[in-house]
Length: 548
Image (cartoon, rainbow, N blue to C red; front, top):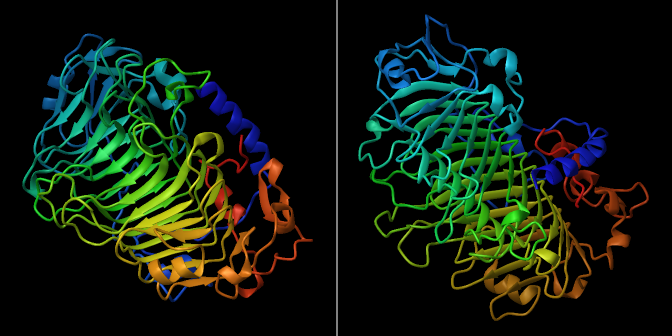
């Protein structure tokens, strides 16, 4: 499966070479208005970007090097190390844990790496993959976790390390950063995994790669795979009891349950909401060997759910990622979930708010994005201020099942869906269940109407559903392919077919509008509606927009 995915990306890279353009970058210093620019709607309050981020630069001074030979005592080296020290492990050697990260005085970094990592690993900014494992020291455990942290442990950087269970062993958390701390001052912080390979056991699985209950934590240029379990959720990365900030960048992330999840268990720290989360340039996927009925299926039905989920999080930016391969199995097949949950009933402050989902590709999935306004089981706060902007959704539904593009339930607030291009097999937008959605914006998108278009629970297509579930919504300048003008507000466009839209070459994955398209200047200020593919292609994780 990995070989097949690499082949797809290699073919796609040729198409990407012709894509070149600048793109507004989001950072803690950007104003939201500046990030979205002309065409932003006044109908929805914009999300607040992250207020802080994780500095992953290598600005540290090395004091001394502690060498740990094969069969040496890594825990002793960790105990003796001082801020500024480098712990050098033998390339290719295996060290058996569990290993505990002690709390140290001072703010210098302790770096754990191989003896020749600089020469044998890709340079910073380039992602590792399993082929680099032979050059990496390997940390394993047969019980517990490979890495655990003392309260308030901080300033550890792992560079070019492989983490895994002992062969044939199931572990719950491969790396456990914090857990049930009740005081935010006790959570570990300033921990970075740089060009590391973390994986579960190929036969037994592993529930979780990193339990990220920490502060100021980053995973960069890394590869996380084979996190899976039958009958329970599994994640490559999950955090529920750490304040952030968090950075997940330029990494491959594979898991059966949720590839990345924030929330999902009640925090032990009162009023805690994981915040200031940056997820950029990653590749999140599930292998087809986990899909029953696929010719690659290996025989075990792991609990497959979705690719990315927020249940309790605020100030999140998700930009320039590939999300692909998701199907109904233990859940209904939505790939991306912004679904607030007071999971066990003890955290009524749980909320999903201030989320920017921009410049991503979502493909080969059953359904695309599901947003829930309030927890329908336990009390929660209201989901608010989510911007879904400039994304490409292709091959949604069909052979993967489902086919619904966007779903909003239970009274969200200030959701904007702006300048996306989508090819889905079923409903364009479903709104329903109880409370209406306020401050809703749907503009400058290109998507298929199919049978029902925009519809809600118990209401007819178009205006009746908009009036019931999206009162006062701003619906304008959309190309709703196959829709009927009398069903929708004026100011939208209704080409009868994909051919009438005038894409350059949808068969080759080029969803720009051709110069001959009558809709080329239908967007704001005479620009193209739909996704700006040049902006999307800028990110290394998105080498192309071609479907399989």
